[in-house]
Image (tube, rainbow, N blue to C red):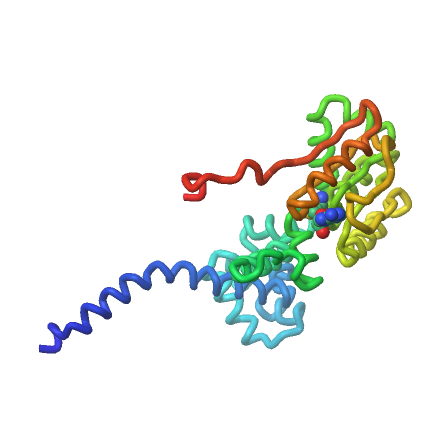
Length: 289
Ligand SMILES: C[S@@+](CC[C@H](N)C(=O)[O-])C[C@H]1O[C@@H](n2cnc3c(N)ncnc32)[C@H](O)[C@@H]1O
């Protein structure tokens, strides 16, 4: 009897097991849908309620394909259809808004690079330094806030106000040393918030520092930053800075003791040294579960 064939049990087991993949694969495809909507400009276009025809004209794409895409985004709750127009649902509008504290495009790019990094991590321990320039930039942008958001300087302002003494100093005009500045979210936001302060930004990766320089020009604070490219352990200035900031995350372990010494030596007497330790202590097995 066909109902008793042993392969049926095998198939049943297989399909039951494959249920764990269903949400993962659906999420993966959803990310692809969002990627296409971001890259084509469709998500931004739908911030204003528009017909399919208007959206197709805005992104210069065939109306039929735009119609299918809108339909899929509507099914996922990204778009809301009202009469013959589509608009972004409120939560998606919050995420996609150009003034959002994190750039939505960077969030998608970052997820892709992290996934590549994880896939490569078994074979290669030095994955950060073997990334392509574009991937490294994405990673640098993905771990920090968007300095072009009008909210970013306010968030920094509130952070500084929570540390007694430092806010007054930055507001009066302080010298800020940003060690391992990445794409500069820390010092650039501070310079926007504190127009009398100046900064020195240390970064070992030239491609990342170039992006920081571009951002500084776009934010019109470039005349108050000195960019220093090199290994932080070789930074020579001592006792000059009111405020030293070090985000150690991408510093190889063997470079941390030397960098810590440079950071301490760089602080003026009575100055401040801030080193966020967001990844410490290491999570236990129970935490990971
Ligand atoms: C956590 S990221 C910086 C995030 C940054 N503070 C921001 O707000 O955008 C750390 C940066 O340190 C840089 N870095 C790593 N080792 C370094 C070293 N020895 N000297 C200088 N920079 C280094 C990395 O290239 C990376 O861009």
